[in-house]
Amino acid sequence: MLLIGSHVGMSGKEMFLGSVKEALSYEANTFMVYTGAPQNTRRKELSELRIPEALALMKEAGIEQFIVHAPYIINLGNAVNSSTYELAVEFLEKEIARSAGMGSHILVLHPGSHVGEGKETGIRKITEGLNQVLTADTPVCVALETMAGKGSEIGSRLEELAEIYEKTIHSEKLRVCLDTCHMHDAGYDVVHDFDGILTAFDKLFGISQIAAVHLNDSKNPCGARKDRHANLGDGYIGFDALSYIAHHPVLADVPKILETPYIPLPENPDKKVPPYKEEIRLLRRDVS
Ligand code: FE
Ligand code: FE
Ligand code: ZN
Image (cartoon, rainbow, N blue to C red; front, side, top):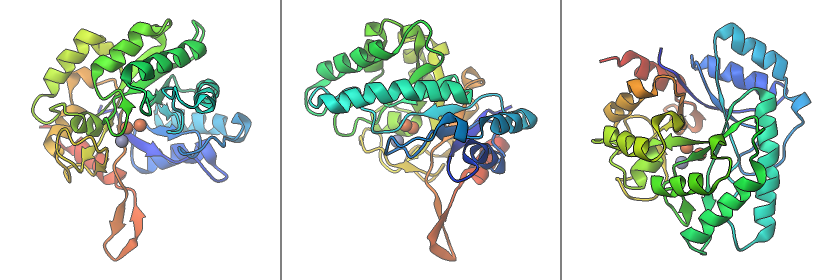
């Protein structure tokens, strides 16, 4: 069965229990969650997240795996501002503990931005941070996300992620998260040559290192380095290419996660609603 879900929220009284309910409302069989607002580091205690109830509901519904995404403000690549870097290291440690406490084995992380110091310095800083945090006993894997390459982002080339692997002592704790919008924006031909991308990936990492796929269309042409997600079929990648990826046999056991934008209601454009139930249905129906 197609392993598909979306990112879901975690807030209010229900917290993580609400996340699972949201995923089920989209008829998803996996999901991705932020442990709080992705833009800040305010986080509730694990004891306040209603984890046992959430896990019980997941079990009942047959959801076996989900993914946690670290907040954007974690930038391990920052060699300029040491307090940003230190905050990133400290917060990454906490996010790993939180992910494990919630029952996830995968924490998705944007590798970081070099903020003007160049890729070499950025990559060195990122691996320094990972080496500070990852040990043989780290209970989750950190999945480095492929990036669009906007600003000074590191990770728009698979080779950059491979370099991080190479320099990380406990690289057995690393994985990769492929974001289709980001790869397309970074110049990879996701539309016509996804298998070529998989072959290149396999040479660098081994296919088993793909821990998650972010399935998004893109508002911009290939190579635009913009990172603006579009709904499936509304962008430059197109539904057929995205469906091909979703149903790719090599990725059968890899969670596919939608991060597509909310859609304004035709009768009330100020109100936006999640597209996930519909997009999941469209993908499930497309078994050609
Ligand atoms: Fe991301
Ligand atoms: Fe993503
Ligand atoms: Zn993105």
